[in-house]
Length: 384
Image (cartoon, rainbow, N blue to C red; front, top):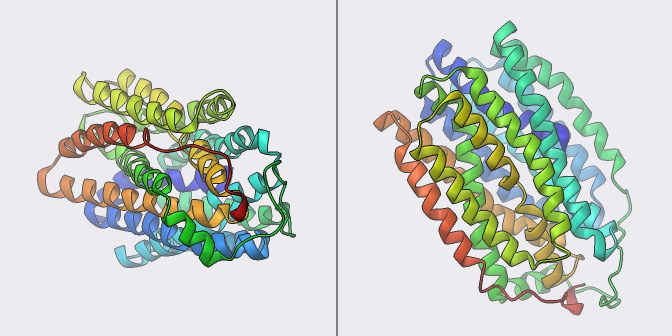
């Protein structure tokens, strides 16, 4: 998680230097990032279904290999198309197989039910630690050696992603909850039961907003900082702070899941995101304010994941958790596709990101409302 999310989150730092040196359009580079998010989400349920039935090890190993191939192609790219295939297609597939859902599903299946929220928070925090490490390091390498050598270094580091896959359990094991019953339904039954559940549909819909926020801010904040006349380190520091504070936020949310219903936690997270975005956008944007914004958003960044995956586990048990969370994650990535590409298109056509900031605020409020009607209950024994 440290490697997959840490390296991937740095892609926005390459936007200004590539645009300045090669003249590739912001919209085109944003489209590659958007495709990455979409393929990551589209392949996630497939990777999840295989990991649920065959075990996660070889799924994650394949993902690591695809990820490294994508990084290598990015470093050798001489056209927007080849760069897009590397950063969009190959890294997107790699993230689907070696990213959050596969790892989170493996850990939560092996976790005691009363500790799933905490362990899920720790796993999610791994991605934040990676962001905290890789953001300033990558910015420093770009400043010293330029963007292409930096990508070559990240390619070598990325090899460890495939090797880490062998730390995951090779056999399909599950820690039983007191309410679980022996036996499991088929994938088809699990899907039918989930899509007939109104609470699941609301959860999936709300997760769309999370993806929109993360893709827009994570990829376009460096370009927005440049637009505001801020230094490149201001944006990289802000995104590093996102990672550092998110590690704390994810673990805190994992602990709070024992004391508060997950739907209320999610509602507060989305509402507070809207408050943080509105304050940042409407107040004067300075070197200090962008760093404060990074810290505030960090507490709310991936802290949606433990309660979202925890709700899926409570609604349907953990037998097909990776697949069902993967479907919710696809909704997340559709939001990421729109947030990433629309922001890039808007910048190319209007020269600013104003409309995206306003939509981000409105979507956060909407997501806060959508989660309230969810009926949180004990796991359904038939799919446990």
